[in-house]
Amino acid sequence: MAVLVRDLVASLVAGSTQAAARLISLLENDDPRAAEILVALFPHTGRAHVVGVTGPPGSGKSSLVNAAIRRLRAEGRRVAVVAVDPTSPFTGGALLGDRVRMQDHSTDPEVFVRSMATRGSLGGLAPATDEAVAVLDAWGAEVVFIETVGTGQAEVDVVAAADTVVVVTTPGLGDGVQTIKAGVMEIGDVFVVNKADRADADRTVTDLKMALGLAARDGWRAPVLTTVATEGRGLEELLAAIADHRRAQQAAGAVEARRRQRWRRDIVRAAEARLRAAFLDGATASRLDELVAKVARGELDPRTAAARLLDAAGAPAVGAGIAGATLDHIGVAVRDLAAAAAVYERALGLAAGAPETLPADRVLVAFVPVGATRIELLEPTDADGPVARFLARRGEGVHHVAVAVPDLEAALAQARKAGCAPIDEVPRQGAHGRRIAFLHPRHTHGVLIELVERPQRAPA
Ligand code: CO
Image 1 (spheres, rainbow, N blue to C red):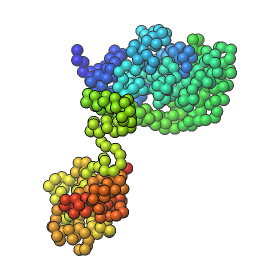
Image 2 (cartoon, helix red, strand yellow):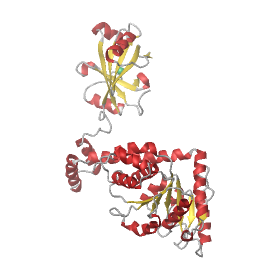
Image 3 (cartoon, helix red, strand yellow):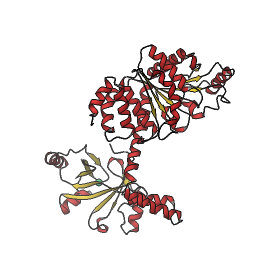
Image 4 (cartoon, rainbow, N blue to C red):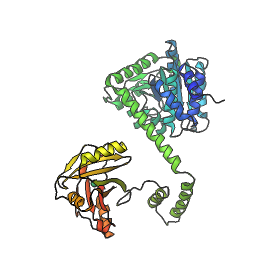
């Protein structure tokens, strides 16, 4: 029963359609082995040409893909289709009619056809589709078509990051161009007027060309082609245009960029889905119910309710003032920085960074990273500075504790209100050029507190 992921992926790479079907199902259903499958799969991906095919219902996309498969098969090429229908969440029912035509290829082991719906698919339809495409890529498909039922937002999302996007329309759908929504015009690399044997086909072609203008993307101007899919007319030109686009993309170095765009989207979606699932667990869900009731009764506004929900879940606080403060570093006064750094290295295996002189503070500083925080070693550069005086009075040891805050002014205002007058009335520049201000130990039960404004990026 328990087939090893390793064996399944080995069968897949050897060309087993059963393994492909099985793996896509496991991924689609968020099987616990999904992560393991993807890890095993990814080294075998990146070869297939992924072609998105979208367009309004009734434009004959399935017939077109079907005809394209027939041609590619005649050339002996292995092909796959992932048909996506975001409107049929449970069974992919709306696709079944279209898929009947695909049965032309149902006995051909070199053709794989799969329907995807929104069922399962942690993180959404687009990532689920990309995972299915990755399986078929590893299976050895040279071309993978992603075909959508319509041109809704979810469908545009699914095909937008394909290597090549084919937009299909047809005469007689009213104004040919208006049936293609603006967002779809922008993602098309090849435009096809299908059912071009109809009377007003020329008009649709002209309208499309007008709408497209002379705009080029990555050095490629999208052509407008005509086809009669049911008779196989125009298919040779279409496949040539798809191949030309791939070559142009490769020449422009744009293939990699699009794939990155695709994986970026999928990574963010998967992370969001995991956060959401982990966040909305039992405890938070019941707290959410309470908050909903309060908002409904007008006792609370939704934004405040969201803040309380995050607080209740122990999520990192976000906002002004001291909220969101973290330990930035602990300052240690030493007489010989190099000697002290050598001890940290020898005794604890912690290496200090490059030393920096802070003339205003009359110290030489070096940071020793320790997990998420750091130890700051401070050596006085003359006998008169604050660290020199600290050493004379108290000897070597902890000199200050530094707390990073998102908003230094807000943190200082709060400290003042609590009676902790800052030593620095106005924040100044500390190590790494970050803005800092100190609170006097006499207000803080004996510890000099350094407030540091958290940088947008980690310091170099
Ligand atoms: Co410091």
